[in-house]
Image 1: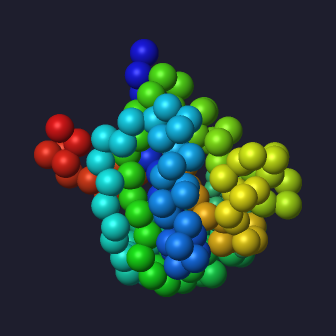
Image 2: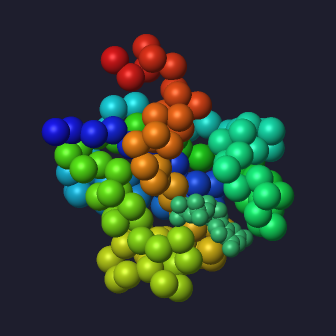
Length: 138
Ligand code: GDP
């Protein structure tokens, strides 16, 4: 059964000109792009998105980074989309990411790590709704 997940090509990857290459990897892996938009978010909007991490020491730095420039927000669909995208992304820290993963190829650090992908069904639902209106997903 097909499943939807939410993804962001983060500001570091966009700035370095890797958005097209990352999108190509995503499509090559069989994901259908349901919705996509280039956007810049405010620090407050980044804080709302990452609220689960609000007690973590890296929260101020992470939300400054996420609001530092344009990014690409996407809704992606395929069978097992959530787990398959996490696999394609690789580990949070690119130093631990497997060969061939997006973070191994494009991430610069544990924070500026090129891509976001939802980690579970409930977070995918929240994250899709945070960035996309229902009519954009038709
Ligand atoms: P993800 O699901 O792999 O994106 O990782 P998490 O949900 O644990 O963390 C969210 C995001 O916070 C990561 O993608 C990184 O951008 C950032 N992050 C996670 N851990 C650290 C850390 O130890 N230090 C810093 N500076 N940023 C981190």
